[in-house]
Length: 418
Figure 1 (tube, rainbow, N blue to C red):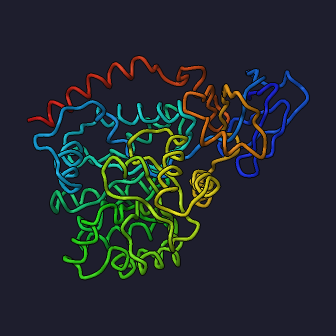
Figure 2 (figure 1 turned 30 degrees about the vertical axis):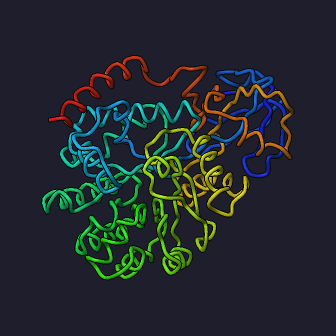
Figure 3 (figure 1 turned 60 degrees about the vertical axis):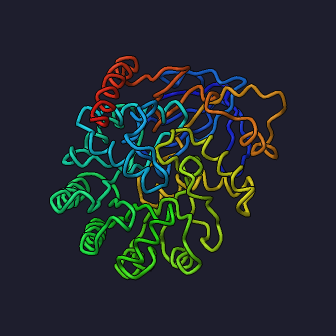
């Protein structure tokens, strides 16, 4: 067990500050307790002058994008979101091989750990290395020590054989691990495929994880192909009867669709940095209720940054305050607990926060949005195990992984240019 000596703990919801020695239980779903004895732990970390609080959960990530950073320009420069998908991301996912997936997962999990994120909900695609791809990701995350809830992106854009393979991958993975049933945007999923994906989710008592109305093209093509809005189509197919659905983005939902989301047990995952990058618009809260959480959409793994961007963008285009966005940041952890996944209060971060002003219960949110950065994460504890400390990943050889990932990235970029 780990002892955080001289800790100043800030409760993740009430911001109540407690001081003392924190003894951390090392187990899934475990917790911590304040103790007086300093010698009952295997490892002691002196946290004097530091802040301790709960770690973060990423509500919508994309492992498959990890090797994209710095890649060559596509063969054709995209002029809109549809072309960005076609010439960038749909080209990239077709080029991924087993080793690239493994290294993408390892580097993503390491980035999560470095930024105080101990659990990621991921949405994966690799049509030419499909079978077993989710287990590759799961084992990589396990190796680093970051929790996960995975799904494979089912789509019809690569033909019937790949569709069948992606349905099988989803079903087989869910036979062995908790997860979700993933789909790409509605306009790339045919009616029969949609029904089969929902059936798999119902069989495993889980939800679907799908991109909805990220760009107007999703609504336009869905209406043209199927005669209904994205959300009405999901309702008619029975998806809204499931629990634990995650709808990514939701920027261009109309009022009727928002009411459908509100009256279901589904969650929205907001990805402000990605939306800004793709120029698809700004998320608005209107009519959606409280089941909203934050993700990064594969742009990065820094949930502090994700929350800050959501707040700054939201002030201009939505009716939100710091409390609303901070609640959404913490909602991803509540979602995980609602899935009955063991994710306890022994997921912690130690922040070396060099503030020139006092941190109190009443002003912590001001510090969170206007002072804290990913660089302040000094230690990350996942399920009671120290996985990152003072700039180093402790569970795997980070230098070896990064060296291998750089070589894999070059191979990926070369394949994408062919």
